[in-house]
Image 1 (spheres, rainbow, N blue to C red):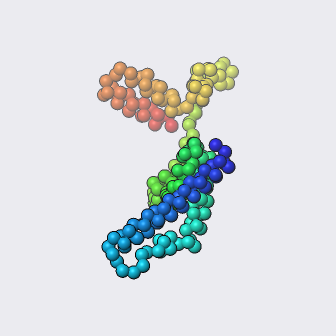
Image 2 (cartoon, rainbow, N blue to C red; image 1 turned 60 degrees about the vertical axis):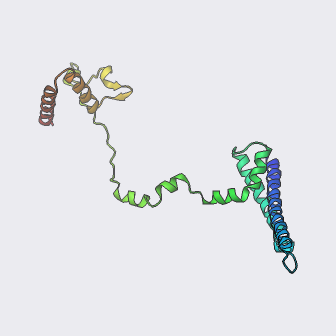
Image 3 (cartoon, rainbow, N blue to C red; image 1 turned 180 degrees about the horizontal axis):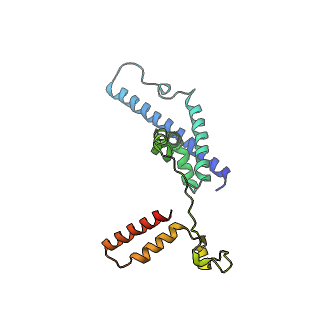
Length: 198
């Protein structure tokens, strides 16, 4: 639906809202006149101008019409509504809808209200770590003493093999199928060897 049609339908809904307000005031006036007559009160019956302010009510209808047009465009262009009936209903209910939209907080603001300053004070600084690359094994040196690394050790899934990758694979292959006590002893022995080599 194009914007011009949304404006027209929303404004029509706004005018209908003004007409509904005028009709409600008319019914109140009619009820009070009837009650005045039936009870036999003395004096003049209520006047329509006591229920309907001729100076303000037409202005309110124009304002409702503008709000209805704006709300219909807002909801129609964002895909919230489709069809003429929905645009007219949005136009009729525009004052209530726009009032509610102005009161809604974003989900992020509602969840984090007052918590950002407190969380910044308690967040520890996290230092990025870089993986440690392994030194070449003695068997990787050729006869001339230059380093020759096999292709299988050079990269693992497109990334260089690191100490963490090597120790994890060694631990998983050396501890598979062993009782927990033996695994503990192996880990302690490996830690002692790593401490001696560094």
